[in-house]
Image (cartoon, rainbow, N blue to C red; front, side, top):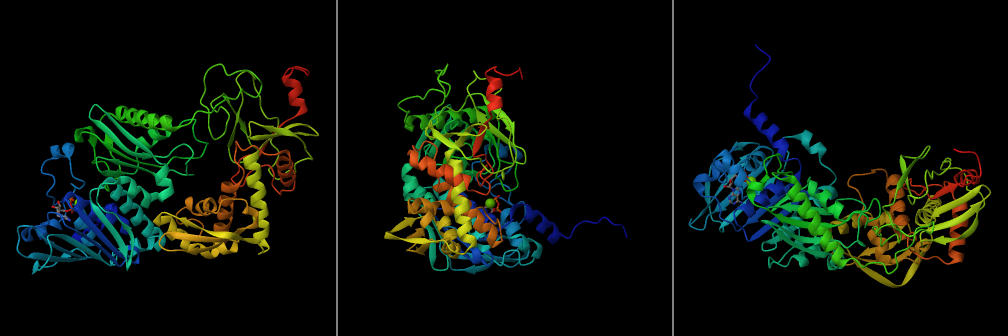
Length: 591
Ligand code: ADP
Ligand code: MG
């Protein structure tokens, strides 16, 4: 007998399913898309055990005729596409005819449906790919797809699922985004008795935005509305003062389809160019509508990517429309600061409102020995070759420094035994806070201070769940936080170290960047949390410090174990040695 044989159909089906149905959220996505394609005005999703044991999606759409139920669960069976040409005028979300077949091959699925014309409904069960008999049953008009025990027959896939919080968060994120894209449809997501999302379907996007980001953030988001040659863009983007440390809050829908990997993200980032600090990203929920023939949707099995017929056009349209919205809402600083060397800027430059200093001057790159990569120093083009003379180990102690003052409300200037030191006040403070907090933490003694009046903070549902899971860790850090109604928390005490900070900001800092599935080790989680809180609560660039505060910061920095980098590895200071200054001024032999 030869070695090559045709796979058993059930194995082939499971392999195919692996491309599309990778996790509970992926099944939810396909089912919700089917409901929307059927013209549903209401989509109700129930899950149990984060979708592992149950996913139930009910809609009030067109329904499936009893005679077609079996076809619906067959592979390559679709009502949405007839010829390959149709692919270029797809107006529905689905078209591959694969979702129900795939889900049915890796779960116990029950499909119940009734069209408006039919007097009774019909039901069909599929278990691990084997299709049962169609039975008559009473049912409201519309469709209910119930998926039980997803991956029960694919144990390998089960092993790849993440913690419940993570899977649930993916479902939450998905539903919230679809709710935002389809504000005229009523969405509900619940697990057990708790509904984590419920929208009215009254078309009010901003109200839905609040469930995604929380009321306060939603209020600040800027409107984007633009139209050009059949391209339409609508939605929301954050003002420059509202940022995140990653791109996860950037959502693009293209023709009603959530597209996760798109060059349009880059177009948006370009719109913010020079307006955001390095490493900060905007929030955005943008909806692009373009003629269907302008976009190829058939490039990704889960339809998470698309290809544009004219990528430059889409790119520049999004870039210009969002840039316009940002600039319309960005206050111009009253006085454009001169550069450090006193020369007036030769031409108008981007002024970063968060830094107070122009940013896009000549960049000189220096390599940090022992550090992690490039460091960028911004200097005016008139000073050639200004390179920090040396980069000692991050652990090298800082010599005693004499404070000279603060410049640009961003850097401290100090004199040391060998030259001039420029200290980034934010990075330095971050380092100081981090070492103090971790030292207290290691001694299991983080002094906590009770707030005079407890503060209630509302978080978006997904963050709220995350925070709930981390409450014990927060206790270790001296926070006293308790759940306070749905998605709200009451902060009753804070670490003394952060006593001057705003409790709401502190709490958000704790959850905002929490990465999925990272750091299963408690220690690592705690160090990360500490790093994040310190970053958020450290003095900012642009904050004027009193001479006493400047001096205290310098003293604290001198006392640090690794004073030369912030907890994230960026330098806290630049040293310009006497030797280097002398060479630069031509007092000493040519370089
Ligand atoms: P596709 O969506 O790519 O067509 P699916 O496997 O998701 O493939 O669904 C197969 C067919 O079953 C669809 O084309 C549609 O006709 C029908 N169908 C699936 N879900 C629903 C629903 N919720 N309401 C009405 N029809 C549905
Ligand atoms: Mg489908």
